[in-house]
Image (cartoon, rainbow, N blue to C red):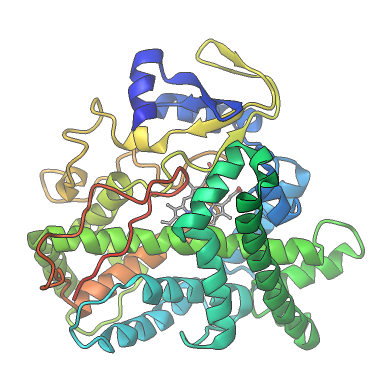
Length: 439
Ligand code: HEM
């Protein structure tokens, strides 16, 4: 928010001192398009961050720099996530299978107030497990609980996130005992996660069949064999790639659905409208399919408004110029950290009437048809835009429709005020809602 305010004063291409670094913030839709899309080749690097490099060992896809290695890995990831050459089950089949487990887990609360966070993030992670490892886990499976618990600590536990953020801007603090202890705990989590993933990869290697790729890991092993000793599809790369998919794909989708439920609690009439449309198209029992979306303009508008109103990754993932770059009359030197302010695009008062209000109707035309407005870019744009966008869109639609079809979401009757919808857990990377209860 502050950056958007400064952008209004200093212009949409603005340099900001962050710790000991100078970042350039792209502060509106036009400059983000110009930088990330038109000059995509110059703006698609990733800055090297000591704490992150320590975790990723320079592998994976999310934080690696823009080069031929990233391009091959990205191509592989896109085609494999779309299901090319991976078993017979589509991504959608895997999501709809999970929905039934999600609904059952909610029913165990028997109408009593509870926080949906852990059930939902288990369900979302299971979609990734299914695509990556070819199987889902029961929510109380020990190996699954261990991976989820340790991932959550690094990603959503307030103290760890806080310390990680400080270390990103002031890496020298790692030498102080307090920071080094928390960092040590995070590194231990990473070590255990990688060990568990390594076991799963070894199981895959033992049962691998060239002509029957069951999942992402098999597809990767296929590339590894085809590469015949070259250094792109290595074991470390596979483990870090899978870790990245969990990190990038779990909390983002989970939080989007949680913000949606919070909006429903705050806006009961919206919840009713959604349910009415869902019942008209699916009735009370039919399992939602992504193709139903075209017949559900209000639901589509609701989801689009959630993407806009609660911008999940407000400053995207930081980019870096990989050559001297030119934009809006400025020259930005090679190696500069770039922050695309997606939040500013979604809250630009010149584009949106009352941007701080939640209004699904703004995405409908006079005839009630859904209108896809180009200024909604939650997944960012350009060569580095979200790798899991298609999966995320499908998950959010199918999970939300199924939840509203089967349940009514109400505030905790014991609470005297509604859970806060304005403020998040203050952090720079993710617009994350803290715990709230509902029935
Ligand atoms: C609502 C859910 C999600 C949102 C809002 C979201 C948003 C984003 C954003 C803003 C970026 C940064 C793009 C850039 O650097 O310009 C990103 C990158 C990425 N996302 Fe997502 N994401 C979501 C779900 C997912 C899922 C489900 C997966 C995969 C399982 C995923 C995997 C990734 C990966 C691997 C990258 C890095 C791409 C690269 O560096 O080439 N995301 N996402």
